[in-house]
Every structure is written in structure tokens, then in C-alpha cells.
Amino acid sequence: MIYVNGDSYTSISDGLRYSDVLAEHFKCEVINSAISKSSNNRIIRTSHRDLIRLKRQHAEIIAIISLTFPLRTELWDTELKHNKFINDGEFTSLQPTVSKSWFYANEKVNDDRYKSFFDQWLRWYNIEAETTKLLQQVVSLTTWCKYNNIKYVIFSGPPQEPVDTSAPFISDFYNEACNDSNIINIFEYSFTEWCIQNGYVPIDNFTQEIHGQTYTVGHHGEHAHRGFANYLIENYLREI
Image (cartoon, rainbow, N blue to C red; front, top):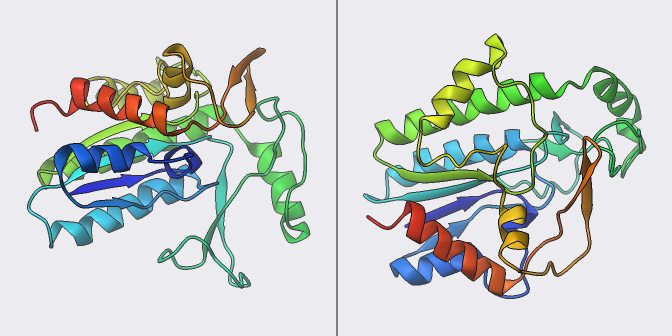
């Protein structure tokens, strides 16, 4: 069976998504657990928990995990009345800023209850810290997948902000990820960049600025999702 998780780049299309195309190709069941506005914490945690459960039910699993913006974080909010993050307790993913500049503009969004949290989180936000934690989580998840014979591909939906990967607190996690042929380098490639480079036009208009360079990070439709699914099959899933 095919298991997919991520944010809106994995859940939104004007037709089929790459999860559906992969299921068509392999003629199997698909579960798409992607939810718009998800944080990396939610994506990795729910993927790991879902795969633990699914491993009891399926002998062969392909996991396709798409990462997201490091600016998204999360809280355990006991006052949530409608939590779209199903089967994940009272965790809720949050994005403290919606600015096109990577994190310098402090724009409040959605809920005034989070105002002080957003203020302090942005003051203490550091991309090196977030990247270190993300790579550690990715390495831990893939190690568990290997141990349980779950095939996987992990990549980034949008472009990631580059960091000094030679720093001693990052390098070991980064090198471990680079040595894994089924982790697509998140600093060099992304779903949105692949779509643009291959001539696909987004179905909506979003941009993101990283270090003075503006990237097109809109969502893509069925044609792009089909193309990306074929890319995954040809380059990462051919032997399955």
C-alpha cells in the first residue's frame, strides 16, 4: 500500500494528486494523510505513528513524506473546538508569520490567543536550530523504516532555507541524510522547484523570499502531480 503525508503541496490539486497516481501505477490502496498548514513536527510524528499501525496490517508499504516550511511550529491547545489534525491529540500546527520575507516581519495570524507565543517564538527562532531538529527527526524516522522493511522517499514540498551543514551540531545528521539515496536533498530540491523547472504552472499564486531571492511556491494541479509521480517512480521506486 502507498502511505503519503505532508502539507497542502501533498493534499491540494485540481484533480488527482501524486499519491493517487502512485496508487494507480502500483494498483494498490493509498492513504493520503496530508493536511494543509501542517508543521514538520506533525508530518513526521503522525507518519511514524500511522506507519507503526499500518505495519501490523500490510506486508509491503511505500511511504512518501513531504516536508514543509520550518517557520511552522505547534502547540498543545486544550481549548481547540475543531481540530483538523485528526488522531493527533490536541496538537495544532501554527505559522507565526505569513510574511514573504522568511521571518523578519512579525505578522499576526488567525487567533489573538497566540499573540504572546508568536512574539516570543519569532524572537528566539533560529533556522540552524530548526534544521538540526528536522534532520534528526528525518534520520530517526528513516532508520525505523529500514528496520521494518518499509520503503520510503522523503523530500521537501517548498524550498528550504540553506544553512551551514558543516556546523558540528548539524553535519552528522546532514551527512547521514545525504548518504541515504531515498532522502532527496531538501536544500537542493523541492516539489515546487521541480514543477517549475519542468514547465508546470501553479494553480494559484504564492511566493516565498529566502535570502533576497524570490521563489514561486504556488500549488500545482494534476498534470504536475502526474509528472512528479512518474519522476518518483523512475528515480526512486523503479525496483519495487
